[in-house]
Image 1 (cartoon, rainbow, N blue to C red):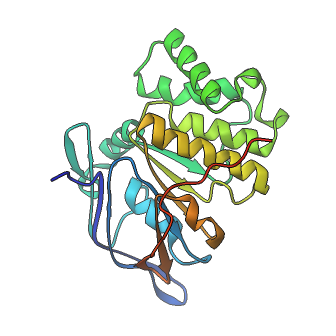
Image 2 (cartoon, one colour):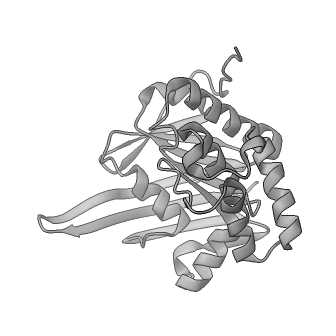
Length: 244
């Protein structure tokens, strides 16, 4: 029996606010298998970003446990020290944000080589070559030496995906990555994600408020006020957009 690559066991997160305690997640149980393109949909404030932050260990949970099984190791994420968690996250998990979060003073290729240099997994020449290969994967290699301000939002998001892949993580978590993009560009981003799952064996967990995207995932769940609910889905295969 295969062990899930990500497991959440009774995970809860409560924030203390001026108005009192706010439960962002309520006893969430979730198993994600390797090679899934999992979508989690929900309205603003449903707890989607909090869910991702529990998985990647950026935020502390209130109760429960998050287990990640990669490279033959099954890690209880929130039992790691902060330093160990940062090292583990850099090697295990890539993060794609809606706002891209590229460093504006670095070229596109430098934005991708930076995490490789920080992790020390590649020599400088190797990291540049790998960055070029990743830019080729997301079809933006010709813009490698441009600054982020000189490419479109969709192109910046492609670079953000390439950066998330820099250290060859098994898992990508994506927080509303198409939320600020037009529909055509969003289609292209979905095509990139689908190829990463089908051709590279990546596991992708993506959250979005757009209910119309449900059919694009291999599996989809709905988050409602911190409660994760199963989503019946007739078509379990991601759809690829037509090239014009």
